[in-house]
Image (cartoon, one colour):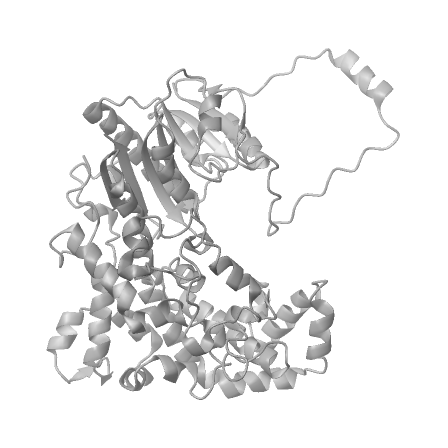
Length: 583
């Protein structure tokens, strides 16, 4: 039923098992890969000395080569150029400079070989579900979606609809409902419940305001009729006048756009609304269930479904963190769950099953005293975290571990970087790393080496993260503007404001500009390190996705499992769906 290859691996390998063996050996034992994927953090770039971070990490022949080439040429070499042709060219010239050293070409070749293929149009599936010519989403169904979301929802709805029909015809399992894990505003479910798919959807969402907004979109999509309230206007107005309060109550303040929502009080219990039957020509339905997913047990959700014998397929479009793990485990924990098809994202939100993870190079690792938060999360040993498969848990006797820095880099999409956006985020990273140097010089953080080993990984000081976050666009016009904008934001914090004011008192624009002048020539070196980290982290994403596929394959109840790309990478880089269904 699935593609010819259960994983979209490079044709260099003869089988999925050969690919997995090689991938795990590469991730588990290659020193430079592990250094670039979690062994260093960009905030240590200007605070690490004797030797500096650039010299400590990269071989001298690599540094000499990079010094003669522009950063965009280096990006082309990493991700686009024909490595074999360059290698066969000998020791001639490459782009008006020296040719890449053989060790660099070997590293690039090794990384590329272990990346999962991401071209949905090149999927080996004979039906090639994702890229079939498909009806565009009806305008009313696409309400609220941007171009990227329309692309994702349109293709994935078609993929899920075809997959569901294929499972029904091939296995005899008649899927009654598609259960959307973390449905948000139900863009995917709404498309599936509408023409031409007409599926029955159970939308699980923990935040009630998302579900309420989704119901408004349902009306706009003509999935359900707007509720009509019949009133006698004269009596209604008279009642308002008689019962009007002396002053209108003040509505509760809306949460800020970047604030975190409070967790719902319920955990495993689920509340549900009546089923919304499709209105007009569509024959599908949507049922909203308010439920916080904390594991794979969906008994509370199944109880809410108005069907005596539901047969469920779990779906998700960009489930964050452990949510994909919960969806996979629901296959084993719930007899009514027959299949899964999930696209993950936000690998940085995964927890760690095998902690403590190794943070950074030995001389850059945090201590429990300096970094209690990193230590506590690393040692959490969360049974729901990465890795989920026994294969990765037992690899080499210690298992495969990926710390948060590696997982954060795995959500990059360097193949999509253009010159303008590359320059913009290289500048942002340069400014933030240079501000860290000012924090070091002003005593706000400790050095990452020396007597206080690892005292400031990822911008931490005394266990508290120094998080700047996104600033106004005008703050990136110069380093002075960035520092002033960042400090203004930090001063607003009740806990950090006074301490920062005291330490940063007297810092002039001239001093700030002097930092930019002194360290400016090293911006390119920082850009090279960041590019190598992002390029290498594609292997980290492959490892996370392969781990999920391996878990499915390890379960006796499973009939088939595979991974394949379902979106155009240029539109949606997190485009790998993990599929599995029971015997």
